[in-house]
Amino acid sequence: MSKDTGGPAFPRTQWPNETGMTLRDYFAAKASEKDIEYWMPKGYTETVIQRDHNGKCYETRQVATWTREQSRYRYADAMLKAREA
Image (cartoon, rainbow, N blue to C red; front, side, top):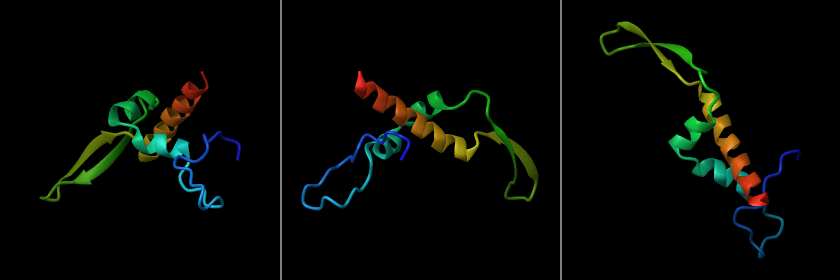
């Protein structure tokens, strides 16, 4: 694996072959909405066309879903880097 994952988040000595969640995954899962927005590329939005309950179409702009998940891992990578210092 090319990325440093920080090792297991909850190491178990009973089952050494069971790796479970990595520390990187744990940090990514714990990122708050404010953290996600901070690590999001600025200005990256997509236009979504939706219908209201009357069937009328309207456009909304929202951040792409895949970018939100990527920003979680940018946050997690920063947390792992901070542990090195």
